[in-house]
Image (cartoon, rainbow, N blue to C red):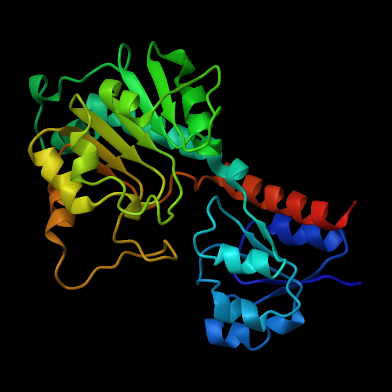
Amino acid sequence: MSIKILHIDSNHPTLWKQLEEAGFENHSDFASSKEEIEAKIQDYNGIIIRSRFKIDKQFIDKAVNLQFIARVGAGLESIDCDYALDKDIHLIAAPEGNCNAVAEHTLGMILSLFNKLNQADSEIRSGAWNRESNRGYELDGKTVGIIGYGNMGKAFAKKLRGFDVEVLCYDIVDNMGDENAKQVSLQELQKKTDVLSLHIPWTPDTDKMIDLNFINAFAKPFWIINTSRGKNIVTADLVEAMKSEKVLGAGLDVLEYEKLSFETLFQDKNTPEAFQYLLDGKKVILTPHIAGWTFESHERLAQVIVDKIKALYVK
């Protein structure tokens, strides 16, 4: 039987090419609305997405012949996973594909914050030569806490092996620690951490997880890096903690204000006060959800998806 696949987002060409070579029938539609896709989805056995729109119950009910949903990315929050699984639809993601990119980006954010690289660069370009105000910190001797120790967290911990740091991890799954990080309770992590890095999905349990109560549970002032999902942090609470210097600096690749597609921000005419603080802050680094968005990961993500789709059908 020919397996018909609908691609609704563009991806690295190796994805299309290798599926075609394996005997799958590829179709693409990068422009139609969700409703227009729903009108024809019954003709397809598989769908490949990034984050263009939500795959909800209504969509799944119309996809009567769907056998798999593949997301070219790490998370599946844009899919009603429980309902899809109830319909015996396989769910495929590729967190292995961009974990190295995320790890490198996370480390880069920490080093830039510690050494005030963005601030110093901006000042020199404006004609200032300020050495003392740009004195930095060293990562060695610090304790790095990682929340979420799956593919991303493990890849980041591996990058830290060249530093003289203690690496702790917290995860809701037991026995996740390895030679690069010691798994501890959340309370121990909050007691010891100097630098916190988030590598968690966006779920009902992690939505707004990092609020003022969570932040104030840390024993020491700390830096925070978020390359996971923007809605895991309450931005207004983060800003309040930065004003009190409970949070010493923040590297945010993701923002609470992002649309689900991750392509744009929810920005009205009036910029939220908390977001304006981040825009103006010298102890803040912001990037547009690009931690996992390298040239190498673009191809690697596609390859992981190809391999997993083929594994479903080639026994």
